[in-house]
Length: 231
Length: 294
Image (cartoon, rainbow over all chains, first blue to last red):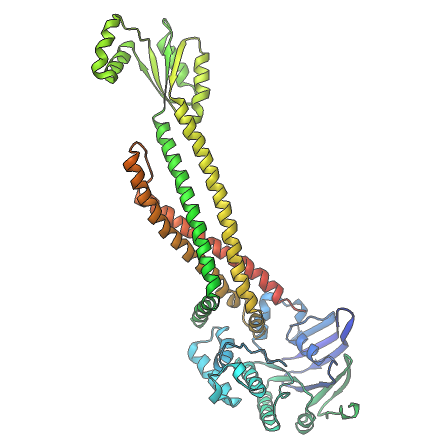
């Protein structure tokens, strides 16, 4: 999926500016880190891509489709092609790990056998096979994070949007998650992820977009995480 | 198939999750539909009684001596309230009177000549038209007197009007109360799962996929409530009319099983439709406010 931000600003009431005049293009199959301090507008940027929010000014285009003009009935179909990992996981607490992953496919009327096969495959991929019958409240933060990743992968999306997918994970699990993300990117999926993890950004060098107070201050191919100096 | 089984599973889950609220909805719907059903049946019975009386409704104008029978008959036949007219000669009238008096009919022979004039048996279309017709007939110079059993019919007609109004009022109350209860139940169900709904929408579930279990929950509760009400009506109405007919055999009541069955089906349909409409409204309102982008 190709994403284009054209003069995008987002202002929250009362007058809090989350993003200011963002011009940005992410091509199909790219891997992009979005970095920046807390409150710099990273999550807002991702929410504009998933159309959880609409810009106050400017437009966001995905595959040349203006998301602002997208009809309400088309939004679910668009989102099925976007794998989303939210910062707060957004798992359904009364469903098991397996059900949380499977229901995304059930919503698309995928045949039961295929649902079982795909759900099992992605749960195994994120290393939660032995936890598949547990419910999110019974899992650790890291495990919940991996369930969210598995759910995002279930529909084989063309775009993977992750808000700090390694935020709650230990070093080893974070590395495993990165392996998964790099492998799906290698398969042609566009990946956009926000992160505070300097080690990951510096060791898996990809395009880095840095936001500061809602402004795009850096856009660097094979960039580094250079926020250290600001702390 | 997957979607269908998910929707059924989720509807069951919703019903179990708020079982107490569901039970209250079920009972309220059931009581409201039961009262509505009985009120309507009472009203229908009064109407039935009225229409029977109307079919037997006869106005008898007596002609003055020397009046031209055929001309007067033509005049009355032309009136819109008149259903049919049968002229009765003085001899026919006397014979009728004798047969009605039975063993006392011999008393009539004491009168010597037949005192009865020509008269008509006029059948009227409806009870409401009796009074105006009688007034018109009284105004005709060829008519000496008019005899009719108007008061009973008038009273039944006014009772019919009252019961029809009561049925309409009950219908409105049933709609309001049932709608309110179903609306609240579904709203609470939706509210308790608002985060889940937002997540489902975020990962690509369509509105219909998310909302169908809630709509089914409301429809199911209202349908079950109506079925219970119909059971209650069968228990109350059928023995009730049996007792009435034993004690008041002159009453003609609705007891045709086919008609009662159709009425019950109508009630169940009404309950289920009401549940479905209310659930749809609350779900649509909730969905548009919950999943609106910031």
